[in-house]
Image (cartoon, rainbow over the protein chains, first blue to last red):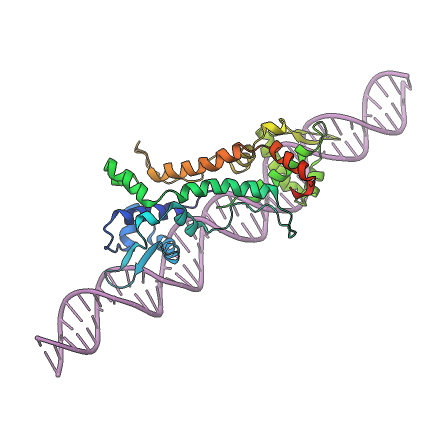
Length: 139
Length: 139
DNA sequence: GGCGGGCTACTCGGATAGTGTGTGTCCGAGTTATGGCGG
DNA sequence: CCGCCATAACTCGGACACACACTATCCGAGTAGCCCGCC
């Protein structure tokens, strides 16, 4: 099990969007070149992000993408779930009865530990660190 | 990203082994029937577990598997890493220079949160809960 | 009675294959700002 | 000077293709306990 490349692309793209002027729309092409990533694939990831309201997309000339909320309101968890889906990482017991499955519970707890950490980390947090070091390309 | 079925099989099998008499070796076939799982595939998972010393395997007649350590010494993390591998879940930055990658660091921290939880949960912990409820099949 | 060989019940490891998902490409359709052309 | 239309620059969404890991199966090889027969 691994995080998909799509999640990687999405995270970096979101941070890049957060670092730009809020009112500018950035074209898909620019976003793709920024990280040297296939544009048509990145497009799919942005579509997923748009469905969750994390980015807003604008068609037509001078169209493109910008953040759908403020950087402070977007957590890493929002992004990873948007790309990976929000199903639990572990499905252990296929029983239909109401008996609780201990293994599954433990694994869910473990996943929650990771999720809460990601939920408590916002794009703004990353932005603050970057601005301190003044290194935009060390994202 | 998801935990593989192999991890599911491995976890349940390990708990089952832990619930048996320490000195009995359980045959692959019995382990497979216990969870209704393809034996030849389960065999591969047990091989992985054996390489990490989590189970001990015995060939020949009356052969089979038993735990490689005491149930208290085997954590869930040991098992999941044995099956899934111990590579980091997220590989974000393919740069060769020494500049640290913020995104990757955050994702690593998140993963650590989950890992420490799993590392702090041993087979013995599960066993204790099960014995309380006296429900061996609610694993 | 003791010893050895064959038998049986296992695991081990490699070879093979199906299947699903992640990854990536391509293209047509729809959308919007801009600029030019005609009235 | 004003409004309309063509065009260019975009996104959107579906269809398609490929690679790779997970899942699963099968079989030969090796191993260890057991039993039976022979000396």
